[in-house]
Image 1 (cartoon, rainbow, N blue to C red):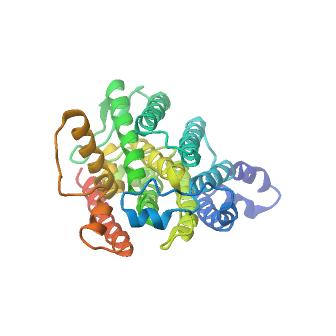
Image 2: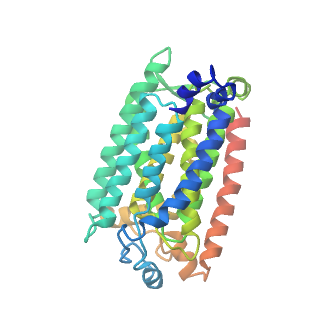
Image 3: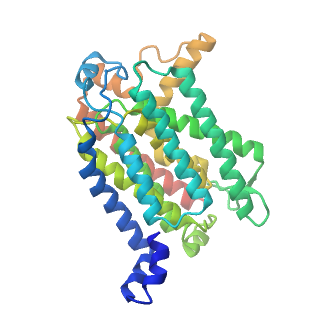
Length: 358
């Protein structure tokens, strides 16, 4: 909205042309998201459902969380949607992803406010439906943007983009999005942990979209495909980072509010989608390695035991943050800082590997 408004206003007031600068818009969307969320979120504490401790595996954490307002994702993601409408010059694909992000939040919020949990199988099935719809949507638009009508992935050690068969693209996309949703959800068990790790992922992806994939010359120098809408995706990503920081202001230990499934599932969904939009599914290691290890190994452990009666990691408690606190004696602050440090080290290493070894 503001981008297009700048076209008309600059004929009357010259500085209005700055509204067509993506650098200016990124600053506006980031700070607006932070300050609006930081100000508005506490006003919803009495309206939001309150946690009953059911999401936590360690008894003392269940008692600590019990009674706190949860489902805050419904607030900051709704703010995010409004901010995107105002600041981002969205095309159909961007609008579709925004709607699906909001729907993912809504499903999580309905579970947050339900008296009894929806259950693992129902939530897993709904996540699968969302992932399939998203994969088809992305393939439809990206294949039509490319001159050859195909979708391509770019990888380290390979100079040229690789054509991807539609069935392979959809399969990889569904697995990636579904896994990102559920591992991010499993990581939301320590004050500030899931939000902080996702914040690293959002800032990383925003920088990649804006400074590398969205910049024609830099993309050509690094031998990666130029993404025509890179600046738009960067704008959406930094906007999400802004509202997430506004939430984390209140979720810092000891937290006064929890994001609930409404927040964690939508955050995981968005990260998975942005990785796919980047054209390199392996970038998930730059954004979410710690999240996948923390929550994903637990999902794998349960899957193998439940369906194949195979036991792995018998002496390790999952999510991994519970193991570190219960078995290793780490404090909440230690878990948060050490997990963030690990992810930052991995992010720098993976980006360096992917972008320089071509």
